[in-house]
Structures are given as C-alpha cells and as structure tokens.
Length: 335
Image (tube, rainbow, N blue to C red; front, side, top):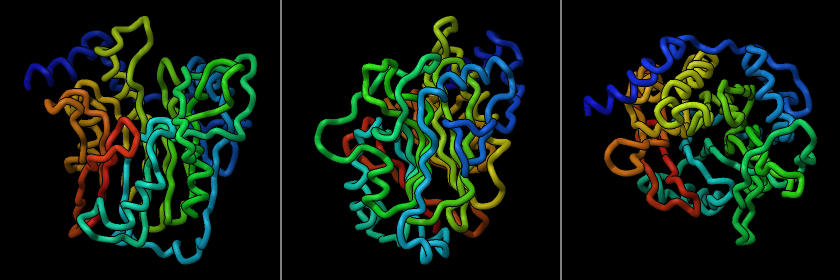
C-alpha cells in the first residue's frame, strides 16, 4: 500500500516538478455557438489552452437546457426527499428509463421510495441538433450507440421522463464528416427543477472536458469527468495523476458553499490515493462512495461525495446491475 501511494503521488511530482500545485487560470469564456446562454461559462485563460478547447468546442452543439414538466411543485423539494445518482452511461448504452423506473420503485434504496431524484451522468449522448462537422473542428473517436431501438439521446430521454435537464457536450462523438452528427458529455437529469447552470472547461492535453454545476432546489450538484490519459508525448498512465489533479483544482474554486453533491468519473487509474481523489476527500471531509475496478484499490474510476450540515449523514450504495453500461451506478441519499 505504501509503495502504491508513493508511486501515485510522488512520481508525477518528481517527473514534472511543482507545476501540479499551481491551480490553472480560468476566466469567463465568450458565449459563441457552442457556449450559448443561459449557462455561465469558464475556460482556461492561457491562450494555448483556450485554442485547444475552442477547436473541440467547434465540433459540438450548444448546451441543452429543459425545465421539464410540472416544475412548480418541484421547486420546494428538500434534500431529504431526494435520491442522487452518479453514473457513466457509456454513450447511450446505459438504459436510463429502466434504471429510473427501478429507482422510483425503491429497488436501489433499500425499499425506500423517494419523491425526487437527481442523476449526475457522464458520457451522455445527443444524436440530434448537432452541427455538421466543419473545418478546424476536432472530434473524438466515435463510440457507437446501441442499436436496440431504445432512446439514447439525452434530450429525448429527459423529455420521456418529464425531467429537468442540463446537458453540456464535451466533445463530438466522431471525428469525420461522414459519421453521424452526435456529441457527448456530462448531464444532469432531475425530477427537481434545475437552475443557475455553470460549465467549466478543464485544462488538459487531449480531449475537451466540461464539468457542470447547478442548483437543484435546496442543494447544489456537480458532475465531473476527468481525463483518462495524457498526450502521446507523455508517460500517459504515470503522468495523468498530476493532470487530473490540475483539472480538479480548476473545478474546486468554482464549487458553491453549502449542501453539495458531486458525482464523478475521476478516471483514477492508480486508486483512491491519487491526488484528485485525495483533494476531494479533503474538501468534503468524509470518505466517498467509490468502486474498485479490480478489487485491490487500483483503477478506481467512479466516485460520489456529499456535503451537508450535521446531524445529516450520507448513505451510499453501488448497484450491481449496469443496465447496459460498462459502469455501475452509484446511489446516495441523506439520513
């Protein structure tokens, strides 16, 4: 264990000096087509970083914001009435409607039926309303959505559920004009009304990553998906703990005070002792729910954090059924 901690924390610092301790400079980003209102935008202020995220931004559509239906009675939702979920849905392969039906039935909450839910989703996909792939734009290698006939477009799914939606694409799902026009990124799907959305474009070297923060009635929520690898010129797996910590530091300064729930795929290949996971643990002053991908504390990807005032405390569990995704959902609520 001690050797693993030393490798995960110290080696990146030895390779790259103390640069990882310097939080990246984020500035308000201009609202262009892919950064449309009413989302408040932040992006790296460094010209090189901004140029990189701008080329990826050019390949996606603007954010999707939907108030859902019957919003008036949902504005009064309280923290104790709401169950929270963090889940990487693997570009539409996770069956969100089936999962929500079981969640509402109490299948994943020890029989307790909550009035409301908030889903903090990574790798949601949008399959309509995305611009044609143009010159100067970048996209990621396409992950093909399932061909089962189930709805995969996150906008369509949220409307089927009558839910509020904040979806902000990070990258185009495909890197060729001959492929379907799709984008993918983080989303918040909620039976509670969502407000005050903030998008945070993260520093990095490869793909564009955008974290989302929003208000869900009496609690703030955030969804985060960090880079899995660095660029080809780096020691990809060894170096990325420093990169992910740098990405996380850009988010932390913009997280609101008060009750907060964070759902995250941190891509911590080296385990819970990576810098990013340790930083969040320190911020929340409590142990998160997380999942070991191999049972030995290495390659821990998925996390969920709660912050609330005493005497409330968080109850967590992970769901064995992946509902078609390659990640298990994490479920949490306050007691």
